[in-house]
Image (cartoon, rainbow over all chains, first blue to last red; front, side, top):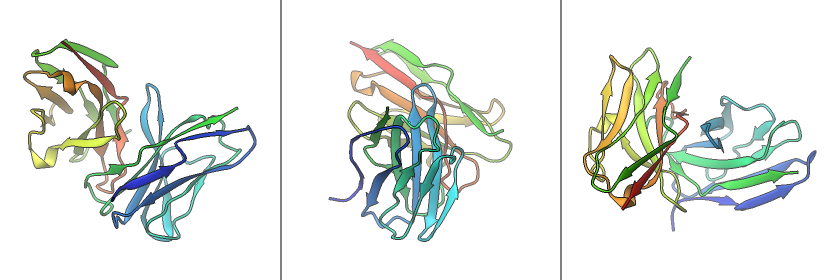
Length: 113
Length: 109
């Protein structure tokens, strides 16, 4: 079954703790993206990676970090420096960095208290 | 600044009525524009993109560079069209999408 998987679906953490969200794809896509979805604000780009071992900041990268050690995997770490981490996080991938269709994962809802 | 604006949070129509979901963008170059849709309990997925000029599920969208708009239209709404719709802009052709705030379309029977 091909596609993008994100785990877990729901995640709860205490304030001050770092947390890592998983994103895996078996579509053989080069480019991967992390978005944050907040009510009334649409999706905002956190980080993106167009090739293994390379990634770039998006519009709201502060308080987040990523790695891209394998083509299939693009984990996102929400650090304690992120001021408002409670949100719905979406991972996506596409064949190249060009304007092709982005395929989205099911998302992870992170709640920090 | 590059921006996408969807002025309506919620659009409610009756089945069989025409639908127009508005999208305006601000970008000085030649834009790559998309509409993405999220049905209830499903993943966000591509509905259509302006470069392909196709009609998907009866929806069309025309790029109007003069008005910097990319409105989504369907002549006769169906109940299964009820979903959240996002307009998105790729200003640099790198896949770095800029999304609008989204519009919830509610089609009443």
